[in-house]
Image (cartoon, rainbow, N blue to C red; front, top):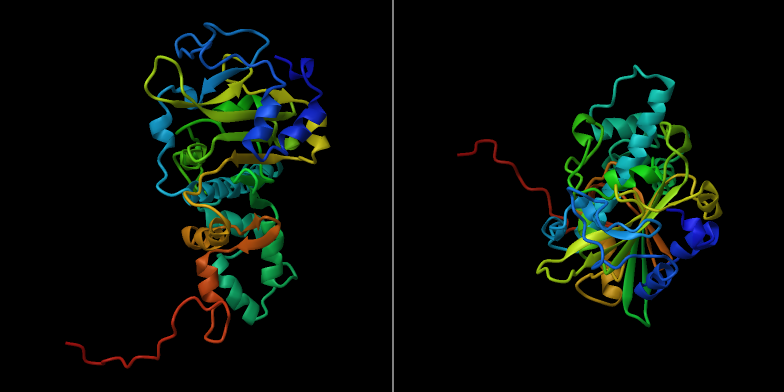
Length: 362
């Protein structure tokens, strides 16, 4: 279907990416011709059955109407945010690898994510940066921490809070490889479908963890644009969709679904001009609205910095955390411990006196 029959793509995408609340995203959806979730029931054997051409339909994530159990896996709401951040790191690494292959198809792949980051970003393990700072060892002519901060700008976790509605919104924004609109349903919106097994330079394997963020949200939206040099013959443009939990009639269990434009699962696509109007050169943007942190108020966002540093103890890439406009960089607690001293304000633990060593243990 052509969304341009109903909306002006540039203005629509600009409005869509500014949706930070449930009210805002439902206003966006009201502009579109959407078949009710109870009027179209996905049938894996015949997806076109009941499909109304020219309209959008709610398609089960992973094309599985029993997907709720696979999505509601996280024990804590911070975990899926960390998983999404890792996905963003992988998107940045994969972009560099694919661009490398354009120049030399025979170059062997890095054998680990850390090797990839060293090759493509000139970064050591982040817990070594404080020592490099003390030894005045530069990275590409810059102070190590300043250089790492520049790399962190390619990936951002952003948290907004609408006080009047008491709603949190969590955004994960990467400037990585992105996906073409015709591929989003098979990659970013898949469940347990992954080609990471033959890519030793990536981190995850099962393609599952980040999807738990849907269970913590009332609505989510996603947009993505592929790096133009890496389209592999597919059309340039930006894919856009919304994810929500569906409670169907005459069925006991809910499932999670996204807006599809075709019965094969493809998402709505907008032209290149729409992406350029919002400054999206390439990469992916996930937004999780009415995010349930299992708590409330400023304590949630204040603790997110410590929590992400704890979960991602020594991440392969640094990234920015923007909480209500206050920016901090996540390096992991490995870095913070390496940077801690007895007199430092960043000291994380009690300093103990050196203990004598028994040269003749029992």
